[in-house]
Length: 139
Image (cartoon, rainbow, N blue to C red; front, side):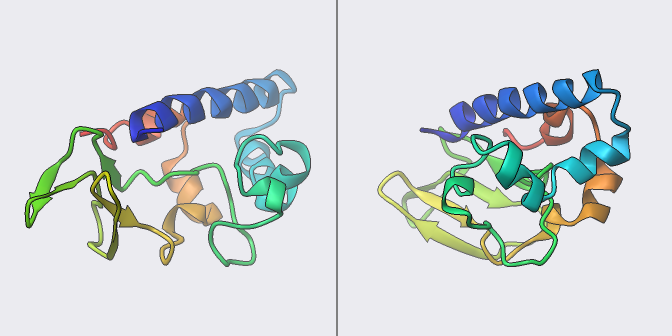
């Protein structure tokens, strides 16, 4: 699955959960709290493939999953540049960090960055519409 297909599928899953929580009249803060890993792994098992393994994507005590994908992540399935003749498919907008090479090209490795998974970051960047937060990601 390419980045754009994942992005659209994830946006739909995110919207369904947010719409459900809004229909229950949860506040913005309650919605953010609902997206904490310990809650999501119990009630939204299909939201993330790691949930079925009871595994976190980042080793932090209180992981918030509202921004599963980072607003600083940039991608394009057709490439956003080249490095030594290899297509670059994704990068970080705030930190070059590490990359991973695959058959399809070079990808940003976000495993050592937990920026979007902290509650205060989610609060600062919050929108009920995940795509609105992520709108700069597709380049």
